[in-house]
Amino acid sequence: MRLLGMVYDRSIGVTADPLQARQWYEKAAAGGDAWAMNNLGWLYERGSGTTKDYGEARKWYEKASALGIKLASVNLGRLYQEGNGVPLDPARARSLYETGANAGEPSGTRLLGYLYDHGLGVAQDSVQARQWYEKAAAAGDAQAMNNLGWLYEQGRGVAKDYGEARKWYEKASALGIRLASVNLGRLYQEGEGVPMDGGRAKGLYESVANVEPAAMRQLGFLYDRGIRVPKDYGEARKWYEKAAALKDPIAINNLGYMYEAGNGVPKDLGRARDLYGQAAALGQLPAMVNLGNLYRNGRGIPKDYAQARQWYEKAAAGGRTAAMVQLGDLYRLGLGVPKDTAQARKWYEAAAAAGDASASKALGGMKRH
Image 1 (cartoon, rainbow, N blue to C red):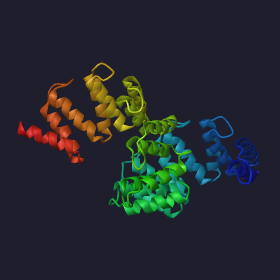
Image 2: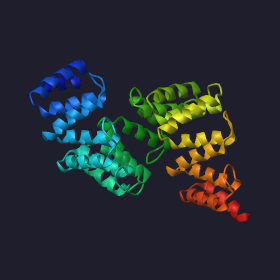
Image 3: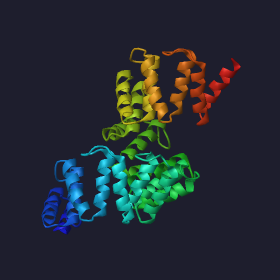
Image 4: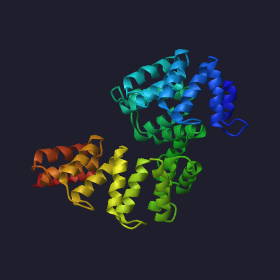
């Protein structure tokens, strides 16, 4: 019965029918099939063939996990990692991932890497992240391959190596990881580790743009900047809007800038502010800086240095050097805060240490005075 459910769930020789899949999984689960219980949990988590219900997802994952299905332990851990239907608890997630990883479940191994990569419930440790991703990739986990590519591209936990990044993106892309196709496209777009080839980048983005928000956003970026295609703000906005509808924070921020600058749309600072706010709420650091700039300069809203400082501080806490420079300016000029040369220098130095040339210039100007 479970296998019949999988046929309808995965569209194996039949039209996909999540409702039929759920009904067959329920029959199998009622007969004690632990894998069917896990699969039922997955349907409830996604809202496929049923209303999304994290409580039901948790119930079925717990039943399957208790019967020895290690993937169910990992799936349950993910609920705790994200706080879906359970209290947010990265430590509990880690324990459940370790259960899966120790039993050879690649997704558990990869998600342990993710915790270390992002410092969730553990100290951030890119080397540990890379080691866990490598183990998962060696076991065939395609998402881990993509994540490894990202570490090599960024030089996190390993020396920056665009060739290795490309290799892992290609492996993951060949195994169906759509984001890996986008990441590979970016390498071609920017000429990193491969010859610059905007046409190849565009082709990779288009290959997954029907479902992958990052691809929609990158296509928008090509048209926005006129990279290997004629500049076309209408096309850019179309793709940004598609990605924004799927909650892509970078696309939302980029759309906000179109409204702020009046690129292909009537200039609308209120709309820009709203979009920056949406992107900032999703953790997008440049959007926080853009919001801060609107408040600092009184663009479309009353000038408010305190609000500007709050947004700059949030972005600076995430490592955004442009926000650090803006904070340095506020303290150097005494805008909304008492003039404080020491604080200004602190922020400029932090940004300069991260490679921000404008911060180095600001520090040089302070020394001349």
